[in-house]
Length: 131
Image (tube, rainbow, N blue to C red; front, side, top):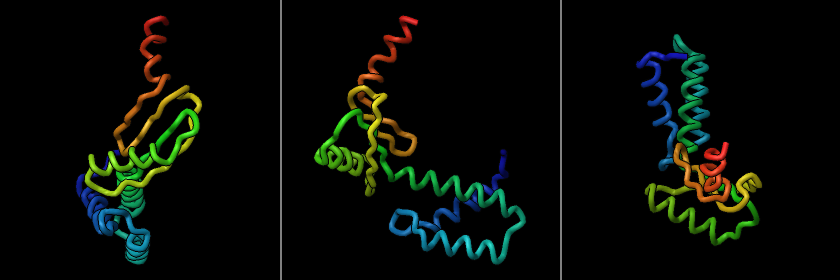
């Protein structure tokens, strides 16, 4: 769905107001939603959809998802967290989950960035060349 520039800009401004020390604040989001519902703008539903999308994107920008093939110790997650914090210049939250499809190795997703070093990733070009 295409949204006009004015609506996109307004949704982005709402996201800016939702931040507290660089992170999305649930209190501020609640206040913004309450204000919008008490005095709804003309394009209320499309605005809420855009606002949700931008909030989700903002949260994803500081939440790293680590997928691992087997057990992973805390020192590895801490070193990944410190690397990402140093690289991005902000505090990063870590969520780890096991993914047996990786065979071995790790996949780290932070926003739109994906860092991967797994057996499945290395074997993919080989399987594509054979097929």
